[in-house]
Length: 203
Image (spheres, rainbow, N blue to C red):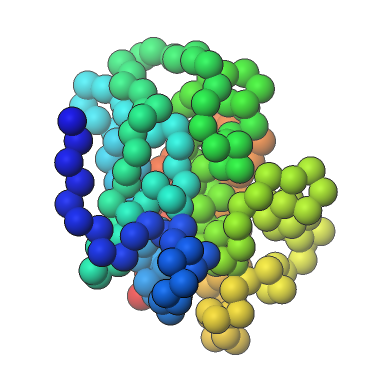
């Protein structure tokens, strides 16, 4: 049995999408800290001495927040304990809105699957838009199209944090998310690299 401490602020999903009709203003610094600390947790899971722990279902509803908005990664129902030299193929389960297309197509869950999902979380953090999977008008697709056209994604950023002096930082976060979302798994950064870069950006 798992026992969680009381999480007063609910989940990141609750905060970003006002699920409890109790709007909490989350400034950019708070969002950066949530991203950096969540990345720390996932990087730690991926770098255990004898085993890798793959979460497999990284999304805002599984990032719980305490009084100080410190994140706690939850719901390890489909996580995998893997030996360092082993690959793992499993039946595909998880939330399609955050799912690595490679995992979806091949059933192969890797560290880079969590990286992909975390890239989607970054997009939600900077846009406050839900990551609804859509071939025509989804969150990931909108950012990818802007990136492909070498356009800034300014119109996609959450207006509450998209102030002029922070647009460069938001563009950096969007660019990092695009790297996490690369369809070439080898071009995605590791969670450790993502965490390090987020801490550099944190203020």
